Figure 1 (cartoon, helix red, strand yellow):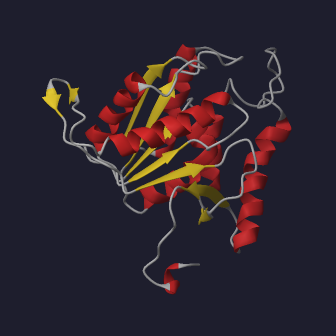
Figure 2 (figure 1 turned 30 degrees about the vertical axis):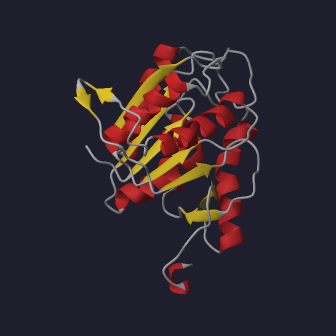
Figure 3 (figure 1 turned 180 degrees about the horizontal axis):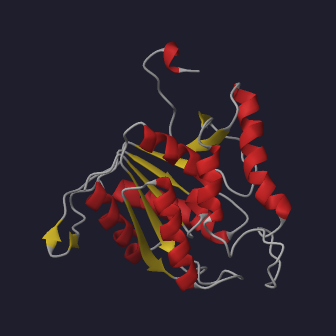
Length: 238
């Protein structure tokens, strides 16, 4: 299956928090989108890997993505080495996306920056014909996505561009709340973490609203780039 967009997250819920409004919008426009989680989030304070598996699938169903896979890397301990790069290369060559979305280049959680660089490096290597990979016994062809965009996470990194997600904030919030163990629940008896506060849950919406304000729309999601943005004409800009 060829995808238009493939979104990577170090943990289940990274994609939902960072760019699910954009994903929902692109799907509404007829694009095929997939999600690849690098880890199962097994080091998360609340819940378990098995619960996160179910939550991730529910979020995928809400967004309507074409596919969601988990590479099962070690939460907190995966590294940017040949083994991990090759596993990601296999996914890139399998789905042949034009656009890759991945973690913030630098963030509070160490896996976010690691995951960002790992996926970015794999995107380049995936285009080299002398790197040979097989999947399910079939030799894969080299494939390099056209662009890599990094969504914004915990830290308020200044975006290079913003996507208008007006009309898609509700589905974004619904996909986030599919992770019932991870976010604000006044009845929960589990330990409090930085992302379980009501303030954090509220911030998902008000950050999107504030970024939307800055570009003249209701809600937006921001991204950083690895190369200059290009447009066909000034009329492409809003």
